[in-house]
View 1 (cartoon, rainbow, N blue to C red):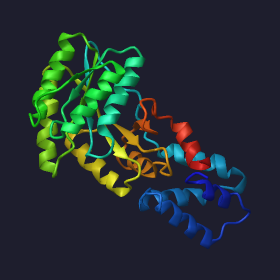
View 2 (view 1 turned 90 degrees about the vertical axis):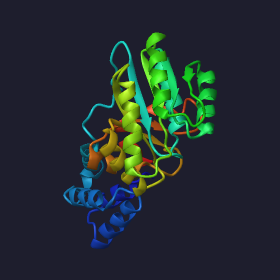
View 3 (view 1 turned 135 degrees about the horizontal axis):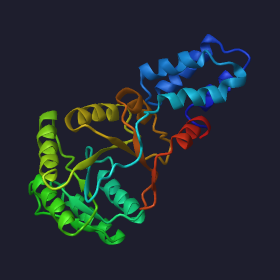
View 4 (view 1 turned 60 degrees about the vertical axis):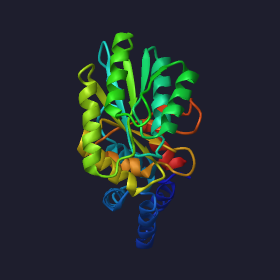
Length: 278
């Protein structure tokens, strides 16, 4: 049963008790929707008739999703995409999977390994690049992320790539570090090509920590879209729904597994159906 399945079952009864509403509220709070959104959903749901429970709740959830476009914005002749997020969210893997998706849709793609503080991240991206047939531009270990990003942008331009995806550093201890480092990366890349997307990778299982991350990254670097990972298992991305409502940032892709193909464009209708039915 999906996240909202029990609520649909309750609403379908001829009467819903105060105890039922309290139980529904606790269940939704446990799903990381956050208290404000939970109260909004409950208040809207109280107005539904039993025969309209499923369609009514579907409409309520559709109204929560951000109205912004979920398409990746690209410009000719070259667009740069920054993939940002803290370590451990699946940022490097998501960068490679996005490259794979765009390559399969007909784009010529390059990857920039600007997470230079983690040798493992650079090696991981190189391995993915070899597997999917995409060039990966790297620098020396511990080199400046902005330097690698600039070299990657120059390579992409000079070699007629139309998309550059840059895996940025996730080892950032405070907002000032984050602002300085990501701001510098973005500035140097834009000397060569426009940054058309800043995609924040969040882990669906981290709950309210993901909301905090989204707020900080959005404040620093104007996030244009979300990539939500670990949407396979029990997590149904309740926190992602909350982020969409509070910040208006659309989910553009979701990760549903470990393999290269376990990455897909976000389908709002299918997502809502999974929340209702599982």
